[in-house]
Image 1 (tube, rainbow, N blue to C red):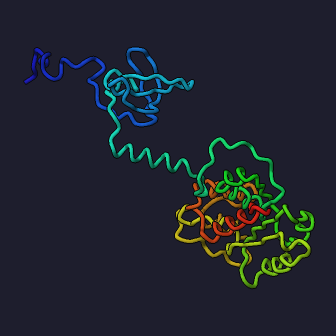
Image 2 (image 1 turned 90 degrees about the horizontal axis):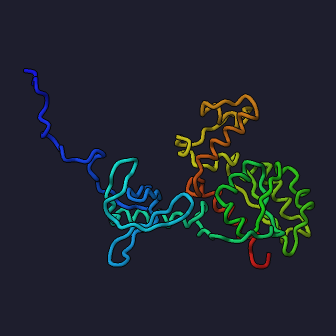
Image 3 (image 1 turned 180 degrees about the vertical axis):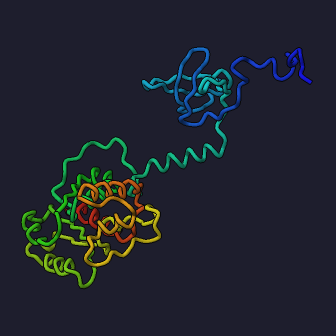
Length: 292
């Protein structure tokens, strides 16, 4: 039967405030809340005990910080909340996040607020723009701290000419990263000859990775593959990779977009193959040695 008098007005939580009852919310770093009484809106930056009570510090968008008693009286998205101290688990997560933030993409300790450093005379050279962009993404912070510039060579077919142009010597070292440096390739012959070039040889270090192209130094799992495909001879390697992945590859603009997509999957050194990591670290050590 239909209740002709409607629902009982006293049924349910009829004493609840119009905005709803306050729910507990851990005052974790970065949570944005509004103090109902003052209208102050800010992100939680810390929670501490002061004057015998627990207080939460909120930083507004202008960087100003204000302290409020921890507890009720806050809104999140218009809903009332009661701020509570962060749990041990969330504090541990925050600590881990801070520790991760103190590391660079290469895994080294970040140097905060380091002044700009004049570029050193020593340089690291790589084969092309893609190589330079990858090195910058992972080791950029480290290299800026050391004042080391990375320059593309546009190939190593005339590596000896590049060495003569740079004229390495005492206090001016030259490190070179070469693609596809494996036994029997033309790159091996070029490197063997260039490494003996006098009087520059003592001040030059040429190393290489085994990959056909620097694209291949990105772990294939980052692109949803178990391994990089083998591209048949006679097909441009990069075009073949794009075709395998189902990406456009009609012109150079397509290839450039494909590289940007691959580079975008790289978050840190952990997304690169060890064979590349070791060689780049070796070059950085060489050009930043005290006697360089």
